[in-house]
Length: 303
Image 1 (cartoon, rainbow, N blue to C red):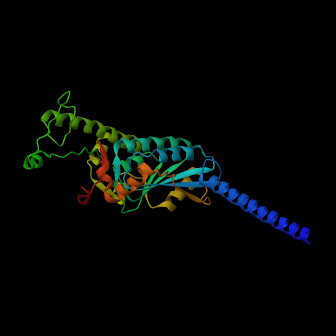
Image 2 (image 1 turned 90 degrees about the horizontal axis):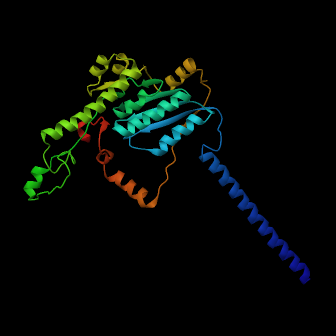
Image 3 (image 1 turned 120 degrees about the vertical axis):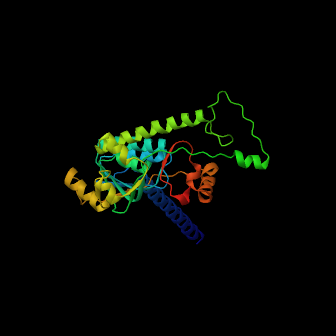
């Protein structure tokens, strides 16, 4: 009788172990499939059109650049739609994104669709695409460059604070909020702004096929609606995602039956910087974190 009881107990233990290992194998399999689906480098989802959103202030974003490079190398991605809703950002970040999109456009069709706003550096990025589409009342343009500083000398004088600066040359720390901008510093800083501005206008001339004089006239920093921009040849058409798909089908033979796959660059949150970065973005405007030359449309309320 005891032998039968022992045998039954052993069978139950074996059954429990078998169930455990089967569940573990199932969890591992599900995790592997999820990992492969998450990593777009490892699995093909079939032929599709990829949509990449460019929104908020444009800052340096290495993961987004890598995502664009992966899409360019993925044969299953037949075209890319850049959906832009951004007031711009730093000039260097805009330039990096512009060059990445130009490389992408050399491999497959790329269309920019401007939603609410595509101004300054965001318009710079749109220039890199094969076609620019915006809503009739989208805000675009604002072609120009800004370098901002503050003169805190008056406030510091009232507080009785006198800064002491040691520098290798008069222009080493210019612009500097702790001392007035001298005529020499103003001229040097303006020369940098003017040089970057000429580069930006050159992109407009090259990519939009405008005469230099016309491009310069349109690049006085003002914003345009989508309707205005279309009439001035700063964009190609008004519309949205559907109009982009129609153009891809008619001009680039990209089937309208293909699904649109919205691509989200993966974000790795590390504890030392990630958590505090999120808090900082919550408490402070992104525009306050921008250093150096910017190409950013800033309504009065954001300055």
